[in-house]
Image 1 (tube, rainbow, N blue to C red):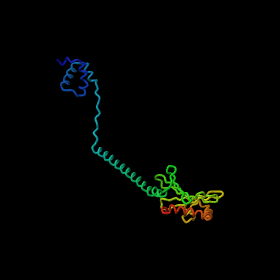
Image 2 (spheres, helix red, strand yellow):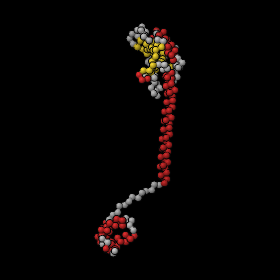
Image 3 (cartoon, one colour):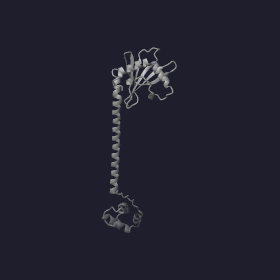
Image 4 (cartoon, rainbow, N blue to C red):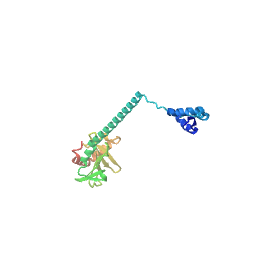
Length: 234
């Protein structure tokens, strides 16, 4: 086959690979021979543009290692943070179980459960004993209550509140009713006024007087509390 007899449309099809320099030597020779004798194809070849392929920049090896090292360090920091948070959460759980959960299990022993475990109650020796358990991971709630069965209207002391605290001590308060008001009075185990459990001290003398006037009723409730929970209270 005469090289000069190659149709133009074949040359046009070959021009892209010719321009990109990815054709064989034989093809290049055929195209160039045709272009020397064909003005139209030569003009087309000159005007033809070949898209430039982007050269991939090879990353610097040192930079790559620094990036990898940085990611590894960041991963170690995240792992340490997660380990710390898990350890802290576990420590809080252990502390709560020791300081709140297990002690309250002693308080509610042999008591009937009410309100899906929110309240426990029993009646012993003429006294109602009530326990409100602390919420999960709460170190500040949970209380014990005692009141006399079928208290008559003459009785002014309606209940004794016992608050075991995680600090190791126990707070007490009595509810005393008068003709005009209801007073919640903080007291000690020895039945004295406890100013540390009362924020406003304008009525200290009044509260001390109410404790003295109702000493026998308060003492009766305190004794009942000690008989029930004395071995667990501090």
